[in-house]
Length: 91
Image (tube, rainbow, N blue to C red; front, side, top):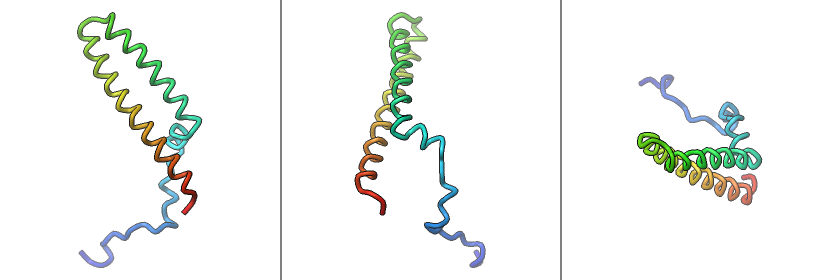
């Protein structure tokens, strides 16, 4: 590879394009509560299906609840990390 063809690492001033406003909105303090409420509501519906649905629905509902549980764990961890970063202040 020639010198011109080699990629260069992005400098700190060149990271503005890495903005994700929708993620920031949803994963921010206000959006997180709303998202968790929606997930919990969905899990209640899935729980009802695991009790009252057809066998195939019960199986799919259990798998979906497992996935939602893992998602909630990930969201809690993201919250913890965001709070830790906020407590450290700007670098």
